[in-house]
Image 1 (tube, rainbow, N blue to C red):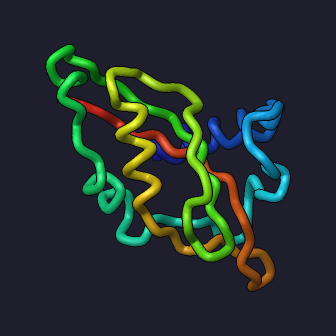
Image 2: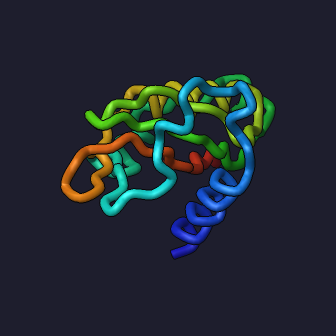
Amino acid sequence: MKKLIVLFCILGFLFFTNINAGALPALDDYLVAAEIMPEPIGGITAIYKNISYPVAAKSAGTQGKVFLMILVNENGSVDDVKIIKGIGNGCDEAAIDGVKKAKFTPGKVKGANVKVKLALAIEFKL
């Protein structure tokens, strides 16, 4: 339930802020919400399997959550990933790489596949 609340807060942030100020091309083509939202195939654990804890982050004791904006296309592939809030020491890049390797179920509106913006938090904990 806590993760769902965080997800809705981030989605609200994305909806009410102009994050498109030159950051991503054609961001307006992606919906903030769909009748059926994209989900990672294999669940969040499939994404975590693609992520290695960076050596620099381990040695520095870096822990926390990396908040990402993910653009999922109508085929369920990840078009782009951007950092909303990072923690550094290689964790941001590791989170991006892990999400880019993931495959998602496509978002749907009225039975048609659509492009969707997602927010996701990846936790790094020692």
